[in-house]
Amino acid sequence: MRRLLRPAAALVALALLGAANDPKNPTCPTEPDWGPAKAMTLTPRVANGIHVLVAEGIIDATLPQRIKAELDKDQLIEEVWVRSRGGDAHAGNEAGKVIRAIGGMATRIPAGWTCFSACNFVFMGGDRRLIDQGGVFMVQMFTHTGDRESIFLAAEEGTAETVRLIAEIEQSSALLATEDNDFLIRMGVHRTLLTEVMYKQQAVGNDENPTTRYCLSQEEVVKYNVANPY
Image (cartoon, rainbow, N blue to C red; front, side, top):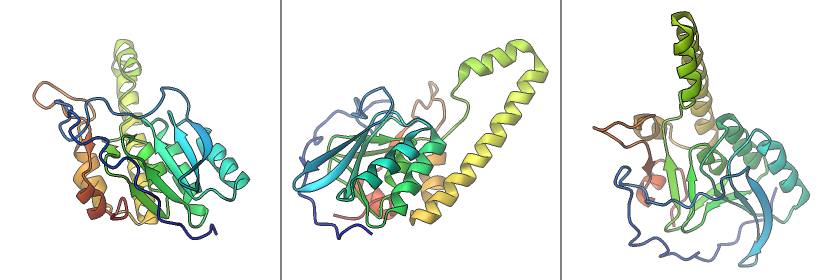
């Protein structure tokens, strides 16, 4: 069990006030800061007297093992700070479970940072979850249809291959939905976050409704028990 958490100082609370919103995704910033477009790095740091692990970048299959190794190595770490455009959905769930297994670990989205897609589940692993004013919890509907090249190739190969790929996508999506639902129950997040928010976002935008992302307000992160109230 980690030592009791101290209240963290506010982190640039007004950082995003007045920032432009994305016309295609009006609840979200136009230029989200979700970190580098490379595999997630894990960097220990001391901020405001608190030992933190800064996790930024794309979530890959190795993240659960790497984050466990970092947290096991440094017993003084109290918070994991995250910013990411997402990545491997299953690895995000598993990394969240690793964080939860270490008692007393908090997660934080600092002001100006964005945690999107699979990053949501890493963040929700915290015993205590903090989204600073100006931090962005951005969601989408998780889908396996994003690999358009595979879909096009299957279509070119004919009806049988297309049917096979559709069946594979449906099965994978159902398994992922079940995994997500189970994860939210374990983490104490309201399951309605999936049905009322995540699964209502389009996987692919169109001219009539281009919105594919949604950013929760401070009121909504409290409503769904995504984060602790300030």
